[in-house]
Image (cartoon, rainbow, N blue to C red; front, side, top):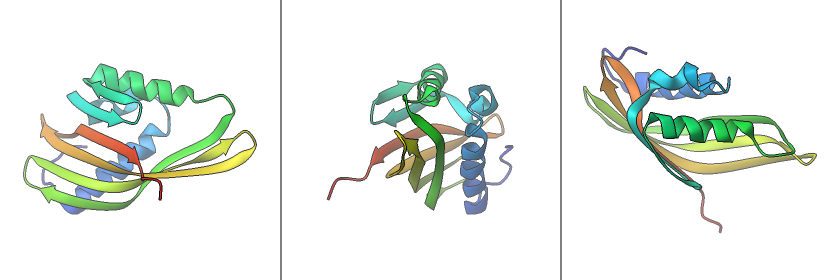
Length: 134
């Protein structure tokens, strides 16, 4: 996505587009949407640089034994900051599927920081974590 004018709508569209393309489980399709120096923080570790992020995504896509029909998507997206060169947003992530014959749904919270690099919007930071247990 070429970022000529950032707005709340373009940020939300970018985030939704990223998730839709990522569902194809081919990092080559989303590579240009991830900054070369990206820093992704997940429950299982920190991944710094596009190649480390690629490895984390590909490991996730390999899945766990017995998990099928997975779907990952965002809801409750709130754009927190926005200027000509960057944006930040927070959201609820939803991971659904079937494992060991039973349906599951995991929700958590996420934050992404986007930057305009070379005229393109890219993710430079992502942080995902599960909601705290009540």
